[in-house]
Image (cartoon, rainbow, N blue to C red):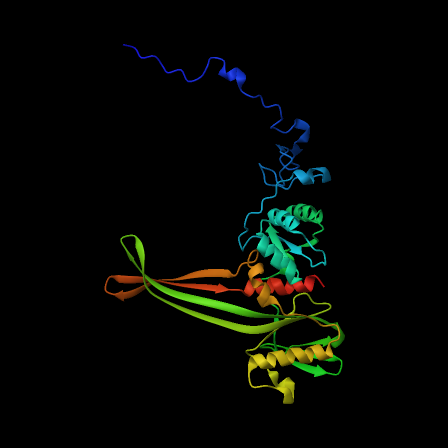
Length: 338
């Protein structure tokens, strides 16, 4: 006996469905043509969907652009949207909206504002994208500036100093491991940035069995070192003073017992002779906020296979986590906003 199919809907059920009247596609005149491949793109894009070239966006289209705040890799060249301190107070609702735009949590954004220090809000892949985000923040009275990774030049270290001599109205900077000296008028010394370099190194030995790596041993060492960078009026790369390898004899009778103590005394002496010197010493307190955009670097190095006994090999790895690049960016940022 043939079984009839169960009737689920009335025959006219399709006629009773609501009709969508709004346009879900962009009109032809709204599309943006790529100057490179000539193909048209939705007006919500910054780059061409087909060839990746930046599109020419009009001022009217800025509000429609959908920004892509993906996390850039350390090797990629990005553009940093920087918060510039201002006395404006932002209510909870405004902070919530601003946090959504830059893809930060509200607590981190509040800490950035409270620091009254120039700090990064976002790192994006194109300058145009940074400009668009900056314009949206400006509507809330939130002032920003844009600095490229190229300008920050975090991989280019400041020149390390071996010594400093005070001569009347000049500073004689002695470069590390060379006989070269640099003369700076004390009036031209404009910035000093304090910080600490942290490094954590983990060595592990693993044995591979049946396709799995089994951890046999692991050792971890950590170190930290105080330092400060100084910048002159005409210099944006800076000079760096470490506690190790620096000749503190210039302090003469004021020289203390420990290197950290002497570093602070040297800073005080520089401050006393340089009337235009600005000092930034809150790096430690803003590190957590910095890490939201500029993370500490992690590098993993495989030492390869090491023979233990006949037919037995272990794999040795070394992982190093350091804030070198993060502090370099922070220091150079403070110089660029002067």
